[in-house]
Amino acid sequence: MTTPQLDPKLFAEGPKRDSRFDVRDLWAEMQNFDASDPRLINEFLHRQMNEEINGMEISARNLADFPDAPWELRMSMARQCWDESRHIEAFRGCFERRGVEVGEYPVMNFQYRVITNIPSLIGRLAVQNRSFEAAGIDAIQNEVSEAARREGRTDLDELFDGQLADEVQHVRYANVWVKKLMELGGAAAVFQMTKAVSLANEALKIIAGDAATMYPVAEDVRREAGFTEDEIDVAKRLVAQGTG
Ligand SMILES: [Fe+2]
Ligand SMILES: [Fe+2]
Image (cartoon, rainbow, N blue to C red; front, top):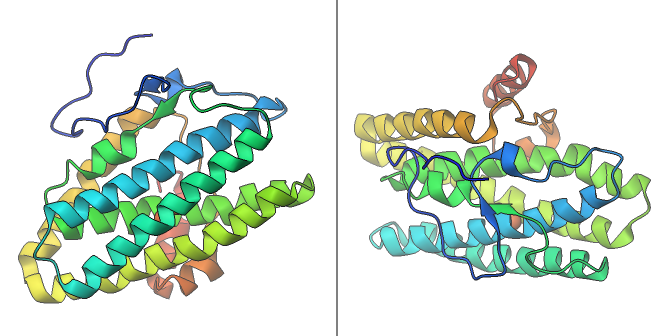
């Protein structure tokens, strides 16, 4: 299926992938298996591996694009690159044990394209770490790890438990630094962040169409990741309205 090119005002160019990968733009073009389809977990593990590649590529781009960022923040972003690289290998191991090869299912690179289109570091951290990764925490906590436990897939248990601890850390350092960067940058920083969040919301609506999956907010884990009670309430309200 060919799609019209995504609006370059909202999406940067995608990351490179080798010829094994079949890259799609929209959620509707992906292989959306039914919940009862045994291929669903294989497709999820493969798709998630590519999301982890996106996470590593974004953190690496942040390091390259913002060389003057505070050293402690650069160290956190470098650690995130390392964490995401381990996640890539962990997901790959899980699907290869299930007989799936790299490239067997289509993948999407919208995370990289949305985030690297944002010109400010505060905007990227607000969208990538505080929004995409926080939503990932909700997903892991609520559905995926529960399903893995129910079905007795022990390698998935280990994968998700290990990943959750790292993702909490990625959200937490962004929560700390978004606040610090706002203090340092004043009104201009707040404006950059707000603009980034609204552009990303617009971009996500194009990618997801009506198909965005909303998971209940994992309150305890979000608290651990440094969200305030007010921020958790806002996230819960957005989920209740179906617009988070
Ligand atoms: Fe990750
Ligand atoms: Fe992460």
